[in-house]
Length: 226
Image 1 (spheres, rainbow, N blue to C red):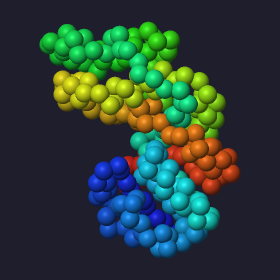
Image 2: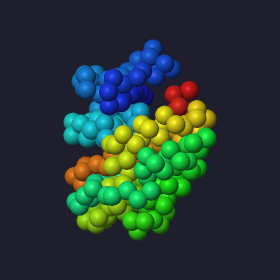
Image 3: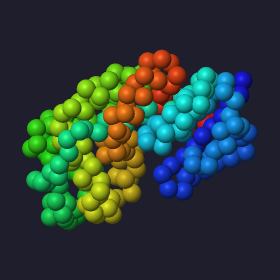
Image 4: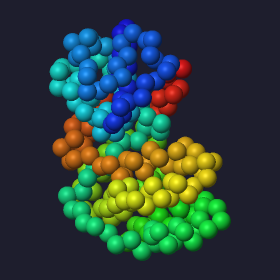
């Protein structure tokens, strides 16, 4: 059984130390010798968002028949980009609010509460969009997201707007180290899934690949590497 590991990131992908000496380990998704990957090899993709999807599409388009599994911290897939998008005026997520909350010690709980109020003020009544789902529901998730592509997605507008603004850096600077760790452990994957949606065309490919068993989604890349 062949095993190939493709590990990547958007800018200068960091190597996975446990895999650096493993045969068949590729660290750079944009510099892969595809001919070195047998068509029946089992392939593990270290990630489950935009770049991982690009690699999966390339493999399958080349007629790959071996198992292809996308691994991430929690097994989340990206949201699907709505056909409708517009700037959202933020009512709660403002610098003055963050300064007020962080006058003594900024807590992640307080930031999440602001995000909840922001979403609620625009008609979204839950933080579930950044809490995500279990990986075994990946197919149901992507089907739901495809259906929502024809609707206005205020959650995408808000999360994406925050991510692209200076506010996110300001909040991160104010959070204590233990609060940052809590965010990374519990919320980062769900946040990034919403803030960086994929085009509908990629979502349809993903749905079909999951339906046909060409692709699987699992959580726990660290556990897999051990």
